[in-house]
Image (spheres, rainbow, N blue to C red):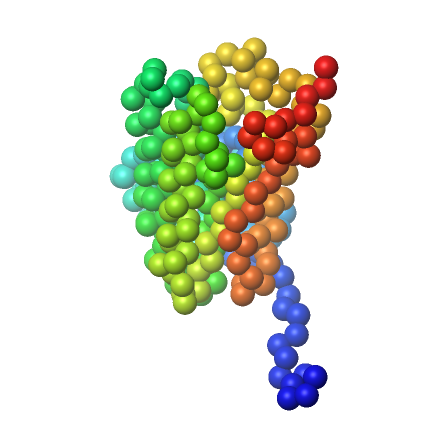
Length: 262
């Protein structure tokens, strides 16, 4: 085209490899967190995993070649000690969270609501705030929030969880605005139906109830699917920001629309 100079075009930029970069994954003792840690090690990152269950965390770290540091995101002293143990942070994957009941609002268990907010929202804020100076200092930092499709829509019996995940979604949007112009990307991954060993069990309280969530669903997502998405977003050239990635299995068209086989 007239007026253009191809010699000034930056051309395609290379993916941002993990080598020499340190990635921190919270809630890493099982599920999406454990799978993400393993995948980031494969990508060449130096990975630090944090969680409350130090026995499981240590076993994971030993098996994948990561470093385990105890972390309870609901405890300010634990978060402070965790941050102090890190020399460098390039990527923070805020994965710690969970759902703890399926009660309607009329029967709300306020202790469960408090727990949901403390883990999903306040815990995420605590850890992000503690590690943000290191992420800024890295010159090419990434903050990844693992939210949920529950962050984008509501459904009956899910108020304590959907409210908390809506909070995580708003946190990600706000932080992205506040860091505009700085070398830190803010990425949100919103998974739909993911079958893990603990999520539905913790929420519903019995193996039968947890299994019923996935009954008849052909190929629900698994933790490794979400780990793949996270790894892809943090290895894009750093001028590319994946603001929000919604990830569902093919069988799930929406929170209320799931194809089930008889």
